[in-house]
Length: 429
Image 1 (cartoon, rainbow, N blue to C red):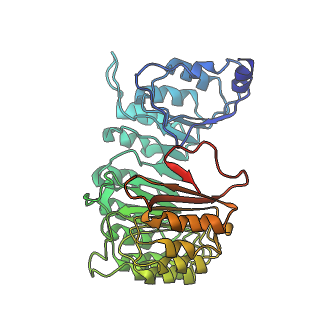
Image 2 (cartoon, rainbow, N blue to C red; image 1 turned 90 degrees about the vertical axis):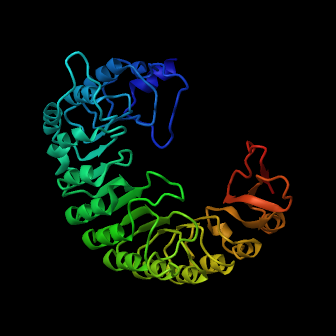
Image 3 (cartoon, rainbow, N blue to C red; image 1 turned 60 degrees about the vertical axis):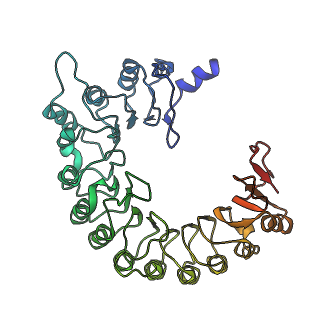
């Protein structure tokens, strides 16, 4: 207990990110009250992933006695009425996660947009906005007051339509980072291209990630972004429809790309107009974007695309492959050409033991290699383990009836050797 008190007393940063915590029952978890009243040094508090109710009064008191607080991201149990109270207690915030961004009116009625806008108007330090976990779009005009100062805006939890999104983005002339759902459509992305010329990072996530979904963004939105956001350095783009022409335009208009992750959802989707493989589009990316270090490929791709990657992707450190390639030569091109490769992830592709074994001379230089739903056998994986005893080779089987097949392979370096906590379905060779 003494150690716990000491920890909270001197804590400056508590950021709970990436992992999402849930409770089966919606009981109030009074963990925020564990901060001692003498703690006045808190600079960052992030708990938007802790999806349980909490003691709001304790949070408000903690924020009030933390004059150094600059980053605050709360979960979806915080309404806009409560958000306004927190903003009043912390007028110097630079990063704010809004919580639900929805009203829960009390006896005095719902908070008006103008009242909320007043709170944002005095928050002159805000440069990063996120949250909007259950957003009521009617309240979005309240943030117009700070949009011109924003360098980062995260709407990845807000299913906004183009009509709801465009009036906001028109005010965000200095954005460098933008995360959105594909519900904004190509029209919304066109507004981004027309407004955010300084954009460096864009992520477009799917609202519906199933293969049958048509999605709301396409090559049209990607090409618009490439034409308007020419300083772009990183893009993650989920879509169902794409063309080589749009990807080539991206490579020509945004040559400073470090990260290009195009996820064409569905199996082996070709150019939506010509029906051709997407080889030339991805080939243009690795040829024209000389600084590229991370690449994700998908869609209908042949060995030709991987030949381009091996020949020109000399700086690539992370490569992700899904539903692509037509023979083991694809992997051979990658291993022989991408000499700085650290991480390779492959799923649902027709690569087998021959492709795996073509990497024997390169695995020691990589951090890990993951294959899922390919054509590997236990014998092929065993050959790697036998010839490279200093690597850890884990295989996973989902169908016990197929004795010689491997569903998943995880190959990695480890100074500590094989792990001792592997579940029963993992076999370490």
